[in-house]
Image 1 (cartoon, helix red, strand yellow):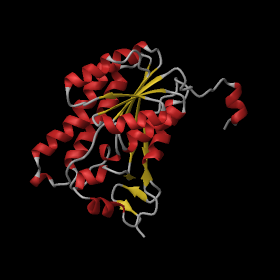
Image 2 (spheres, rainbow, N blue to C red):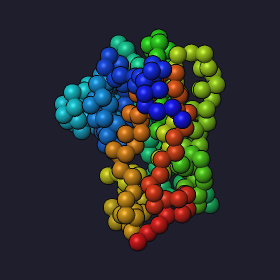
Image 3 (spheres, one colour):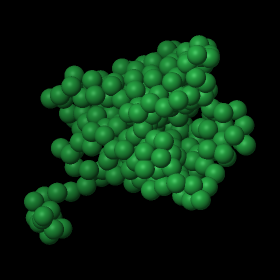
Image 4 (tube, one colour):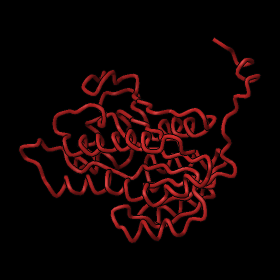
Length: 260
């Protein structure tokens, strides 16, 4: 295996963030906020998009980014967001969420519709709107924050696993359709990540959310995923990280978690 000196002599260089504009959706909390913070530190010109402008503006001021209102479920909001951008080199499709944990026999179809609207249709809306700019950049990156739920199903998670399976196949399809264009298609699929809102929104209470992580010594945190995203985006542009599955060491598989 060639060592660092061989890699250096072959011209292998990370792709710098400086001069590149990165859009991060769902940036008001969790993985989105952590990713925006990390990419700003890497030198990217970061544009934050989310509905909660108070939180977005506070983060933007702290990291030197721009904050724009964005509701991916609203076509007019997506259009206005896209129109406000002069340049896009990177799109991190992070906006999403899970809103129930019911078995299929008790499916809440309103929850299913909301889950699909945010995770799937919203992702397609923004991707379609910004794809011409990504191609025009000459070195575009289209990154999807998926989930291990998009690769493996489990009881009580059908609305979310179905939506994240759709995100996974969306990434795979775009990679085929854009073959030959100067755009990388990257998917990061996290397993157990403890963030301030995800499980609480899904299960309805902080107590229920805490139970998900009880006894797990070190679940992943948002900054771990942001680190993976930044690494993927700063590889030389001929290097495409098709799919990165990221779990804490305590989680061997979707149903296999070590708890103390």
